[in-house]
Image (cartoon, rainbow, N blue to C red; front, side, top):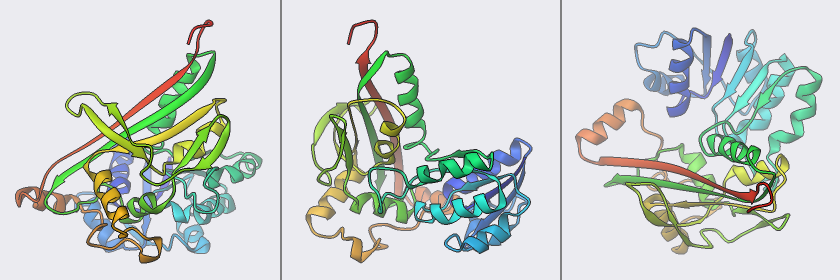
Length: 300
């Protein structure tokens, strides 16, 4: 398959390597080709074209001839890339939503009918969380007669002497400054950032940790597809605790943007090796748990 990957950072570069191993014909685009090449490494024989993900015609020009666009850019570019995909009639995939304009409904959903009209497929929020978490909810819902509540619980921990981004700085900052969306008794609402703290038991070696509400895409997608009563997403771990502390100190303001000292750029593989060698980065963990409650054969 001819696949155009737009955004060759930490996740995008790994995806390119995986697609190449599977035998696909892959082309790439990024706003910073030189940095993208550092993520790919010298052993990956793929050219990276300079593409402005906020300019539809720049994307259209770069992706002509592809059968699928994989949008690995920050979600603020979603609408631009989707319109480009529709223009050139290709299939589309992205990894997250940008919920600023409508926090209760992923913005990609409004384009569903246009993809159907062009007989093309679009897969949205296909990352880990959201993405894998959505699939786990769907798998659990398929085993129940009716779904009552869905709880997604995440854990992120970076053991380092200085902030090291597991995700892009833009994504991490957007999550930190956005109010969490919750779905309660069949209605959407915005909740307090870092609110509703509770204890949740993750598998060993994490164990019981406090988790709190966070802005996550699952709540803006799943209730539109699966009938349920209530849903929320909470995150725990040192990374979210640090952001909660910054928030209470007044250091997390949307107008300030992602300050580099708190939200550094995602390190390339070579930089990660250097951080480990210098004992700046010692360990990192991520976990996702999905709890779905409902009725099966008359029993809860």
